[in-house]
Image (cartoon, rainbow, N blue to C red):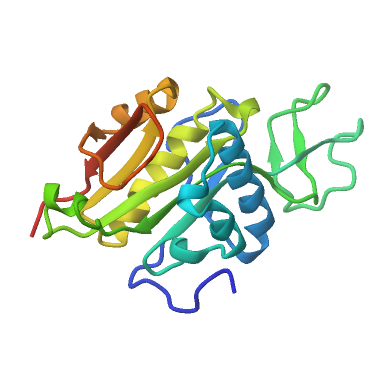
Length: 227
């Protein structure tokens, strides 16, 4: 089952960007019905790297979703935009009184939300992490650590704030789940992603696991002070 029946102490509410974007979207925890979209986005993420993720057991991760990303210790967030259907020339024809209307239409300046499924724009995930020897020697043992994984947005959404909203959302989730620090790794060639991480408060740190690729950058962000 995709969503664990055991819930965290404090439920994580749906997240919405706190800033305007050219296209409205929402950030929310993935549900069982989102699984196909999550698998597709994870696959697109892997393909975009142009490296072999076998060392991360990526195929097994896909087959066993949500795996380590399942609540109550993990979470997958999905960015979605509800598909829009142009209104008929008569204005609100075919809509009932409580239908959601958004400001877009060639003639009337309005737009109706269609009944088609939401469009998945991107994703990100968090999972618990522990450091195995010899990497554990460089880090504190008194902190609850997590790892951000699989941040990806569709190329057509780049520059619209989706990636930033996903980062902010997963940081909020990790804090609410009680983690002290969040770690991640990325390729040095991924300059746009690296800039977003650093702007969000991540700083460079020592390697926390073995990544066989060249030019890997390891990052960490303190979510709260040590107890």
